[in-house]
Length: 143
Image (cartoon, rainbow, N blue to C red; front, side, top):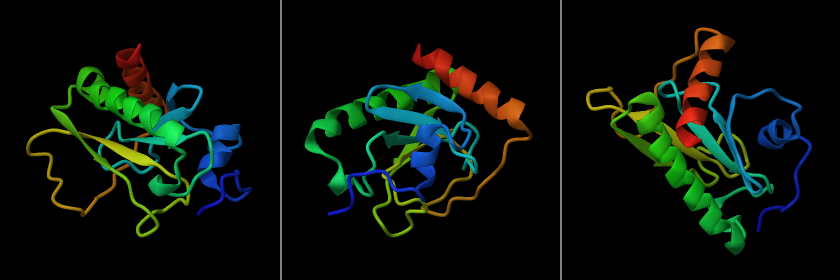
């Protein structure tokens, strides 16, 4: 089983502590969602539990329902806040997991957006103001 305590080198734990800036979209007692710095499409969010766990199988049972309920809210937010037609959601466990802290990708989707299979081309925000605008639109949809 993976460690249940934050590690000093975990990027997401550093974001949760406020050591690394992030465009936070949603915070609850147990979960935080923020914009991915290298989004597949603009508005791509990462949902992480506040508790440091590495994979979905490591997530404590009592956090499963809050994790899924928050994911459901984020899926609605990309449609309502960004005008997406739907979303793509994914969790990697160890293989292809870029940060060893459980995270769910919530990617806004639109028919014809060019995303095919599991090849994830990445884009960037033009500047911090643009990412802040996307985060604001998503927060408004979550309110």
